[in-house]
Length: 153
Image (cartoon, rainbow, N blue to C red):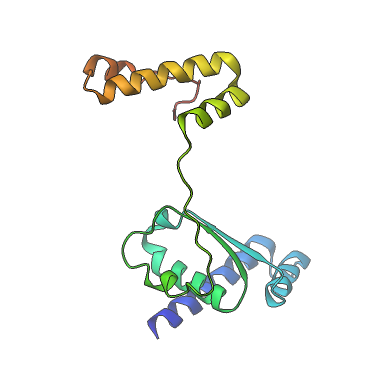
């Protein structure tokens, strides 16, 4: 009953979001609502592990949408505790676990996107990270530098 309530609230929230975003009388809103009604929408949920306090309502919405036979793609790291709703849907859901990229695959991507200079910087960064993981604190402080011009790296 609680999950059904959460799903209903989440569907109302989704509808309110669509009305607010597109305008209740807009053709786009009507088209999206019609497409949902005809099962012509692919629902994409990304990063379920980061959803925070809305997790229960979002899980209920996802389960409801899956039970209603809509197409759903959910990308997430391993879901923390209580994934019961999603695990109970194993007959309706295909689960894939992606493997980490190998170092050679990472280098190939860096070369393709950043060229040879980027690859050299990447190799230097990996070397510093390796030394830092072995306890070289001097290298650890130096590895904070901005290698690719991106403060997030």
